[in-house]
Image (cartoon, rainbow, N blue to C red; front, side):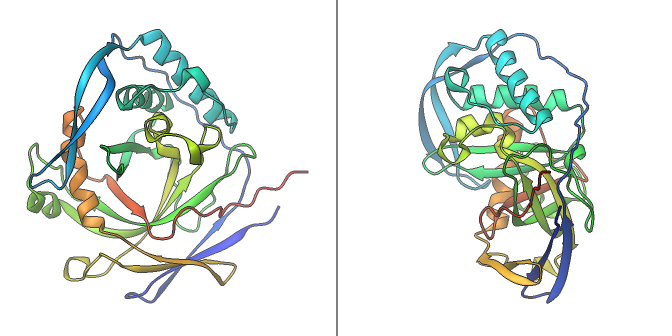
Length: 294
């Protein structure tokens, strides 16, 4: 089995951050907690752009339909089994029908992992809603540590800019209050592994059920004086075994951060002290993990 050494250079810092990634086995042990009951979901969604101080958001005009708890629990069970086995599954007729079902299944999967939520990934779907997924403690890998990947299905990583919260974000917080709650900005690797077959062709509401392919995170060094520099179009590069593998730029990490609090609040969640928010890849998805079999 061979390990690849990764290094990230953020142009302003001129610092090298290395991380060795190897493949082996990992077991996620968790206690299953069920949510009772069901709530209406959207069968036909018409997304309307809303203005406001929290960044561009979307809401949906919904025609309610009944989400069967048994059906959603069954889909969640299949995803949890796939996650623990390191397998990919074809959902077929079991696929979530819309974003509401995607979020409901995601909640079931996250609860079953039995691990504290340490952060969130957030993204805005083109011509669609803002979606998010939890990052849990069991998926965190320390810098210089080892990511042990379950199974032999593809895995990869994304280089991102993240924000670490120093205190809770209050309900209805303004953009200024959200930024005031940030303790630091960091370079991070998002660790990715889809439990759904052919993830690149799946609608976003389907991938939402699988936590948008999140498998964990590596929180790297702080970005010095981040409040005084422009984080938009921030250059970054990924090195594999000392050679440049890919280069890219950020889009607008602060705008991505501002999208999250109102969307969390709409679903009874919030940003808490100590959590991190990852804001999108500078370099796309990279198959940075090498898996060998005997």
